[in-house]
Length: 442
Image 1 (cartoon, helix red, strand yellow):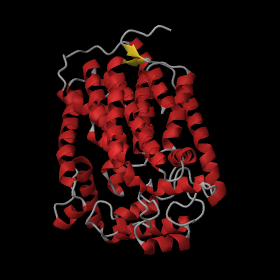
Image 2: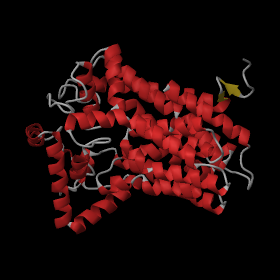
Image 3: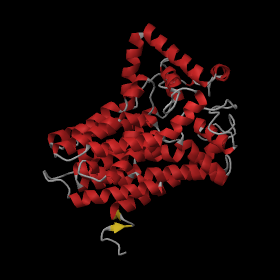
Image 4: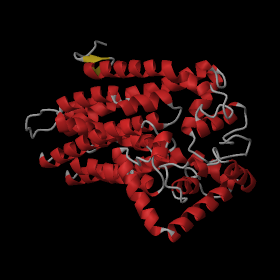
């Protein structure tokens, strides 16, 4: 088949080169940092933390279990997809080997680089061709995307890729589509939820937005959306059945909310994430976790967090505000002891604050220009971080919606004529197969 003009391997030419640049840049960083994963400290804890421990258990034939240091039995500490990916890496490249470190970080880098593709299409749909190209190239060199994909064995980059794909698919579904497209939509949502359950905050927002758009056009949507919902639940079913069979209670996704709640609400406000509350850092907590069992331990931690909030409502309110500020500025404290623990915070602020300002300017411009996606972007920015304000936060948690943040920031600065017409339907139709290929490659 002849190559379509302006495309390479079915991808728009500038997007293709942005993907290659993004991957090359991330792999350069990997070359400098991969050995950090090979440290023997705390029995290779740096290699993925809980992800790495569960992957090791799978690799050794003990199943999805033991998320900390010692064999502790089956777990639902996290959702299954990424630990099984790391377990597959161990199977192919060996347990905690140099090759496994390279493979894990290279795969994360690939996830991050491929995110250029859906970013282009979602930004083009929202803001036009020029803004889309800017957003694609900015993502290729975006410091958070480079750092989080090339340094950590975690599901952060995969989640950002899936969210960008889902947003691009949502824009496609605002126009009539067959059952196949809607069923694929439900499948991708299921895979995203089994990668990182926090993405479900956005599922009703995306789904309702697409259905309302179809309803306003007097197009059919109910049966198609129902088919997507069925596929979504079918995708979740094996994990939910496993959890019910193992723990004899309903656990749709993960059971560690109590610990996450306690980690940020235990009375220690010196840091945005107090390691001393975590079994991986505190021997007393580890002993309690092993002695009580996972479910009882998580329930106790949730009770302790609720008790703290009940007895210190003012402190909790201040913590919520501080976590909100940290999410969007990178600022937590200028105390000497804190900066000794977090010496990179001033640099983080120097990046985070301008990005947030540009995001807000881009959002304001979208509303002024009457962009029909402006309200959707506002809902994404407002809704997704809410759970982290209430529990505990970190810059990596926000990364799931960084593709939207980058698109808005670029729209704030790119010079565009005031055009009312939207991209041609043919171009939108081409976007989804390209995004779909990005999933299969990933």
